Image (cartoon, helix red, strand yellow):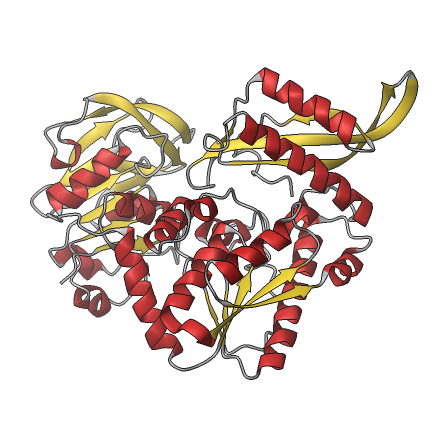
Length: 510
């Protein structure tokens, strides 16, 4: 029987990141809601449970809580942030709100005699994000870590294998976080850590076979990494029952439509329908400047096109989409705030002419999607392709969309990407693209005054798109790009480089 760690979801922004860190350690895990019945939890026979963070106050009426019997079930539990406070509150500890909260990096002292911190340096740093904390641990618990502002930064009851940490070990800003999770998973829970993304691909293909049966499937294919991997997963499961619809909405990069068609017809031998809908999308977007409105219009048009194509090929029961977790968390749900809607999540219209939507990658981060793609045998050139949003260049043009603006941005983006490749930097940068801003400024070209547009260049390094830092492109490369842009692209007289991290910004401008 496969070893299982359960991640119990209390509504925090980092919940899927916790699962991702567990999987990084080659340990299989599943996410369950905090109110999952005890019988359902014990039936899964988990080796351990991780309580996530969350936005609620544990002492408030109606705050999310676990079944109290779970603490008596003999299953090791690690509570993180809200999960730590919940454990403290439910088992008789004290919860307090200090005069000031604790946010960001904090120096921390670990009791390395604890199994949770075995092998760690006694002093390190950790990422804090809390307004409340455990001010006194429950009976039978020991304090095993502290910061200057948090007297119970971690607590434990070794005999019952119950542990709580106020900080976030799952984020990269906690340097020893992965080792702490490993100590819990392997040292406390006794897991072996023998699960790999190959297992995910194999199990997903088998699950898709069972779910789809002999029914027809339509895949929303954009040609990007996510939809490509989703399409290949389903293709391996049901073969010719899958029809991929590639909507050429006229918002793609230079020559991209032809490249997508060539790859999927030639390399994968899939049923592929290419729909030229560029005029339709341009008309639908006319006069729209608000980014959320753009995304929703594009999402609605995508679905309408899919519906029309589905009717042409007969009854279609399933729609496949390449949604990944970064899309979901930014689009928001009933627990998380909406940052921006994604065309295949928050942008979906309310009425869709399909019985079900299949999103096989919904719980994965981008680097995990790439790993699945490699395990499926998808060529590296496609798997390692930099992310490109479903709404395409529409959200890289600030303001309203016109054909002239699209043509301008297409060429500018092509020049930028070409020079990055020529400099050998394409594997060092997570994502790089040009943005056509709505700014115009005075310039001088050929001794004449100009009043033209500004191109912004955006390049970031990242692992999973949840956080990102701006890429340190060498100045000579930036200079060459700038010279080419103002010389080769009409109506451009100024080039700027975005040096903002995520957060506070997002990777895309819209």
